[in-house]
Image (cartoon, rainbow, N blue to C red; front, side, top):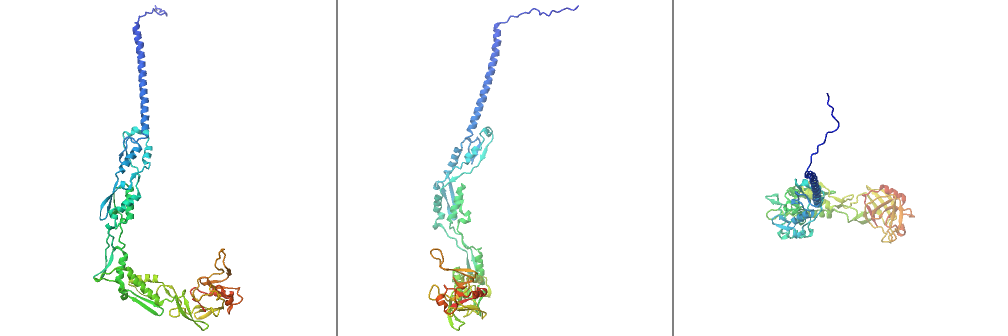
Length: 502
């Protein structure tokens, strides 16, 4: 038989509790919560303080270099850019550079002597700005080395004074270099080597010291730059000296024969050797200018004997008269400078040659009559002209020359050659004060031979020849009938002598 249980709960038994125990339990829970809050608060405070410290240190390193930073060898840990630059500047206060020179004891130039000082270029500050300040923690475990350009300033004027005051720069302490030279020993020409000396090239020495100071160098050796010292102008390696030796060896071999038409003049080694100077020991006294002067004098004598420019010629006119005509623009003229140069080269190389001299102007023939048989004859008295080619008349014409009563318009006599040809052209007189010309005359054919004087057509002349030039003469030119001027224009050559005479 199943026993039936009632849903009604049984009787509840209450266990009495001491009030003091209850209070202790409540107090214990409150205490735990309070401690927990305190701990959390402390952690928050530590976190906040840590953040503040981190931020503060980061701010500090926005103006200071990280720990372990070295700049140009200076420990820059926790230093500002200004402090670092002050230390760099401090290193410059005692700057000194030693100057070493040839054959002299070293001398020092101090920074104070030249106002040497550090000048900030902003490179250190720029380096600080590239530093990420919030990365300061990582810097505690590494080191960084930097090199920046140290800009400096010094007085160039005071440095120049210091350089000029160095013993090596004083004239009394300098020995000039000596050139290598040719000596005549045992009947042979030999080269004696040069000596270097210690004559300072002050400008180059100054530039060297400048560059050394710019690079903060502690020493500069002037001998390290060949330009710092003056060198001998001629060294034993000189090709000129070697050529000189060869030339002297070849002196007796040289033989130059000049031709002047049928006439010849010979210069040989016997004459040339007399132009050299030897001392009592047979040593060559090196005097290139004296030797060259002998050559110059020799060529000048050739010119004096054979030049015809600037001389007066006897001329047989077509009309049968004998006249004397001075010629400054026609004839033979030796180019003395070029001839001296060529002759010097031939002497030095021992050349054997037969040749003409070097001419700056040439005539048609050698001898008394250098006009030859091809020329233009302008008879200013007869007012007529002829063009001879190989002795035959190929052109002739009546003319009108310059007005003889006016010295400024009279056609001057002389021997000339053609300057130029142009067709058409405009003849102009002198320019007046208002900028115009005294006259302007168009012509078809213009052939100047003496400055502004030349042959040209003149269709305004009523007639040519006779006495027309006495009253209607030109401004100095030779007026021709237009058809004759055209014919002459087609025939005339530049090297043909033009003989004008009264």
